[in-house]
Amino acid sequence: MYKSYLNSREWKSKHPRFLRATGYRCQMFGVKVGRYKGKYYPYNIHHHTYKRKGKEKWQRDVFVLSKRAHNLIHGWLALSLKPISVKQQNKNPINQYPNLLQQIAHTWCWLMGYILWILK
Picture (cartoon, rainbow, N blue to C red):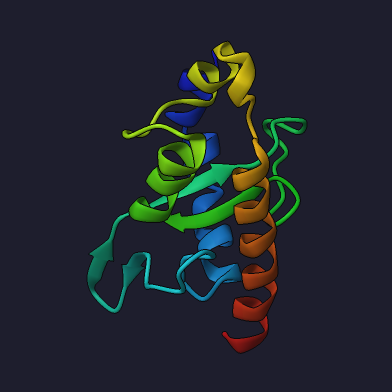
């Protein structure tokens, strides 16, 4: 059900609004993301909470991240050598999502989001 939502037009129609909020920049690294001046920079819209699925708000529910930043949150910061899903992380009681490292990354992204929003 969640995967079908992520592939839906409804979800994808929200991306431009989130990208504009950050000035088409990754909230972790500040690099360009999305379609920017005729070029495409891969990105992910990262859910840091699932409480309002379908009614997501930027900063409250989701962050704009480069592919590398997203892989970092679901890989190294999840204490895994390769990116794993939240569902996989939550199967391991030692590594519940978000763990402390991921919480620190989320806080950084939240702060960077406001800085990018002001600077855009």
